[in-house]
Length: 131
Image (cartoon, rainbow, N blue to C red):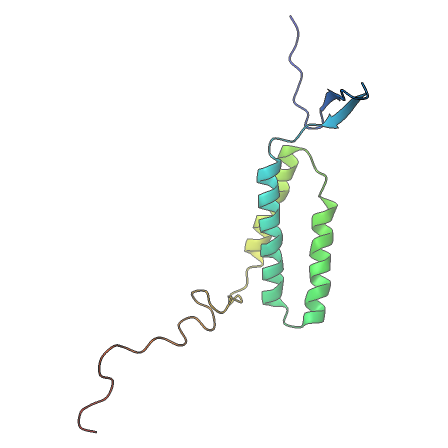
């Protein structure tokens, strides 16, 4: 009886081109790639927002943003599911650890600087009749 092969994300599938009769290998997609892509891009955006909350000078923020991008790019080609999940969890822990007590909230969102600034006036009379 044949032993099952362990899963390896860098397995290849062979395809044959009908016109040239050449067999080519192409990498099969990693099953967790879509989830991983969403989680990593979300963490990257959260990291940039957190850095923007802590750093108020644009030049210093840009330097920090480049540093954050470099850290994410260093771990770009990880295909091991357990290692990628551990990195995602450690990034979430760092975001919680360095959370800003008064983060910058976009102006139109609830809690933002302009949220309900221009509240529509109540319908009906606004002043007293005695004026």
